[in-house]
Amino acid sequence: MFFASDNTSGAPAEVMAALARANEGFARSYGADEIMARVTARLREVFEAPEAVVHLVATGTAANALALASLVPPWGAVFCHRHAHVAEDECGAPEFFAGGAKLVLVDGAHGRMEPAALTEALAVTGASGVHGVQRGALTLTNVTEAGTVYTAAEIAALVAVAKGHGLPCHLDGARFANALVATGASPAEMTWKAGVDVLSFGGTKNGLLGVEAVVFFDPAKAWEFELRRKRGGHLFSKHRFLSAQMEAYLEEGLWLRLAGQANAMGQRLAQGVAGVAGAALTHPAQANMVFANWAPGGHARLRAAGAVYYDLRPMPDGRETARMVASWNTTEEHVDRFVAALRG
Image (cartoon, rainbow, N blue to C red; front, side):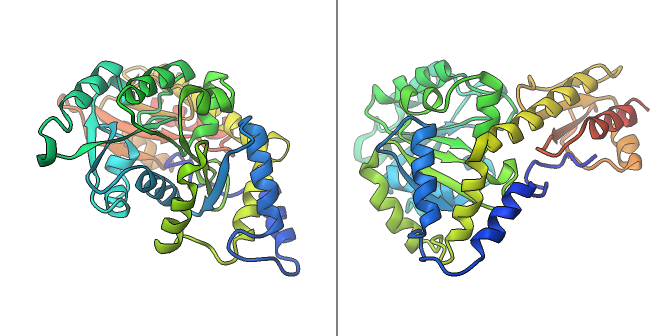
């Protein structure tokens, strides 16, 4: 019953086998390996984007921070949801790598930015001329930090607002595969067809040991990203071990199958928790993340049964709250035991 996060799971056998194969013999360093060439070709096929430029890093923080730094100047504003991962869980990395760019927090229910709120934020940012930060870029997160998802149409609507002010757009896709499975959109529909310029294409939260792809649909900023990656200490020498993970991830749709299992177990967990007397969902559960609340005593029962998850700040009325995340290797038995323990 380990629901702390989907990055706490191990890696599937296909990925471990790919790493073992990559370990044989010698390979060029720093991304010049043959596996990386195949990864780039495959991602171009997946996204229907023959000119896309692909670079790999080991962490989601590096992917997001370096991508955003490549889009905005130090005096720029990055518009993100108030509870976006880049705002709450990256220790100021986007601001650091961008040399001081400011995150402008935009509201929206259940983790989703709303076009009206973005329009309002854009209207006031930069209004004081040289005295304030200037409009820089938009970043969206899918799956959101509340466990909800944006449809391709919702992303397009927000991007259209940003593009109306000449802003480039970044998509934090740490759980991109889960969002695709949840919405049924194609990778192209969720990204460049909706106006997204750069994607952080996640792997670590969906079964990889540690690799994320940064996909530039607009190649103009790709060289700057390479320089920032090297200068920031995120260019791997033995790059083939990043490439091998990503190649295995993409082979025969493994990435979507892993996300499909995680989402299915997330939905089973959400339905089970919602069916417990005195429990309710805090946000709509649309992928593999579940936010819920229940009467006092639920944490004690779950901890006694061995469940691992994040308990959050109690509600004003004392109700306990929690975040649970299903992984690619979560099973029905894990979910059912958790629900039974909560029910008591």
